[in-house]
Length: 472
Image 1 (cartoon, rainbow, N blue to C red):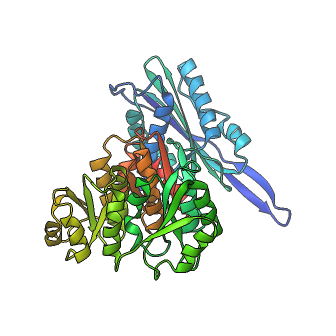
Image 2: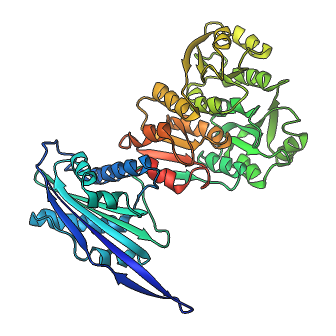
Image 3: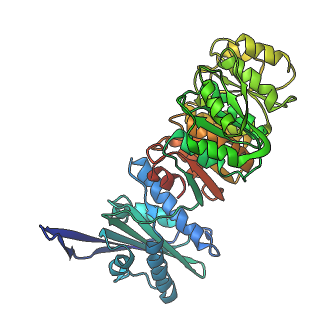
């Protein structure tokens, strides 16, 4: 195995007021290292693009572990790297591309700093380990770069790789390994409309409308919407946004209707009137409290369920973590208090005495005594909301090839994503703006598994860096 690294620095001189830019290129500093070849299975000679993404994934793990921003794959930089790896593979000689900075500048004119690592060996893991064990190569991997282009070419049983690192003064276009559908609305209502628009027109028998800023009555809504091939649309208490009315008209079947979740204190009569005056039939499901509302929703999800999901009604994370699997099974979500089973919940459970009850959430959310009183047959939980969502995904979606990711900082994005995730047969995983070890560990370490992903959340809740990290 052989490696080589170079670092190239471009400095700018600003001349005021004309703002003329003068690029001063520092001298190339390079090292060469030869190491014994470690026997290793070929990675993917027939699919070198998989190897390219595996390099990016491993580099981003190194950066994530050190609290650094991830590198994003830039197609034009990848083209430069691929071309040079082809030259090296054809010649059988490991050497730097003397023109890589000029080639990068053609499509990335705002570059300010660039670096290059090259190597030849038997596998991605082998070469990445060698890069990290070499100071110059590691400095590039952990350097002040935003973008990367990785090119792999195979010649017989030998992998040739070029990694071009770039920093720019302006944003550039980037890609992820997994094709991403990103749904970003300016408000909770807007995001719910975007998710609903994935349904064909005229196909929803019912759509669920709930408060955008209060989760209490909304928690049971995901399975209810999915049971009627519908969506969850969120509205503020002050009124129904015009785009919500438009979407309701578009997606509902001719005999479809809106189901409002919660009483008139949550969703005033004026909201109901808005739909009706626009020719949309409505009905309301409401109980005396959140527990009674969820119990009233349950038989509308499935009159003969094969499982029930029991969660705390005092917080949203466990309920939204359970919502996709509950929706996919047409299983109601039932709410309990942390230390007791409310009367409305107990009454509903008594009508389904033999149905398995799956508690989602730990003992702090649903105490052991409460879980026993609810007839728990299984508990799925984690150390936090992100771990719980991952454990739900591992338990109920062991072979899914699609995934839905939503912000875990609020209930809205995950709640409206549940029916869509259920239709895809996809787990719903929560993430923070900076993914923690649970969401990162589940999504990114299984990167070859995902054929598509849906990400719901605005740029503050799920920034580009989170997507670049999770899906590299």
